[in-house]
Image (cartoon, rainbow over all chains, first blue to last red):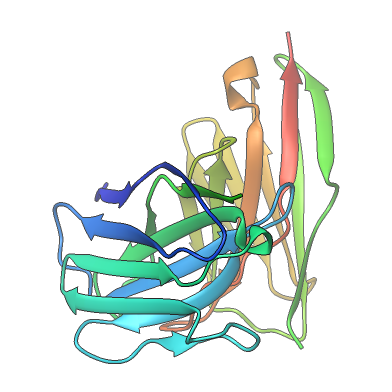
Length: 116
Length: 111
């Protein structure tokens, strides 16, 4: 299947700093990318959907000014956690779809963010 | 609002037996239902997709059923192996809609 690469896999940052997470589709063009957050022993919670070249659509309760999403090309989307706090510590996962009509999602490896 | 439930948080079975996982949904009429496998600290991996007009789908030792009347999908792993131990997520959805995942069932296959 298609490959989605997420980087970094782990990051530790100080409270108040910003962290950028990259999500790349390696062998296909991802019209749509999704960002999820997952707490221990819980399922994935969709944070936002990003379409190449347009603003991301955020789910209810997700602060768009805190979680900045940029989908500048068909192979790259970034999530920036701004002014991170310990409660932002979580597992962040991206997924990509080849198009609006495609029903299978390909997931990145995930990023473990720890804010100290 | 849409609600997705998976039978149990954790399921332990003996190696060689068939594991059966359940996914129930309410307030929802999905056209598709997908099953994913997630290992600890990793992103989910797609396993199977079944459409509303398909009763059953098979892939090697995996079998999925989809009962739109009961609003339920069953996911079976036959001849289970310790390597099948993981969390399994179901995701009923409609064409072009975002994925909503169930809470997952953590399967442990004991040698």
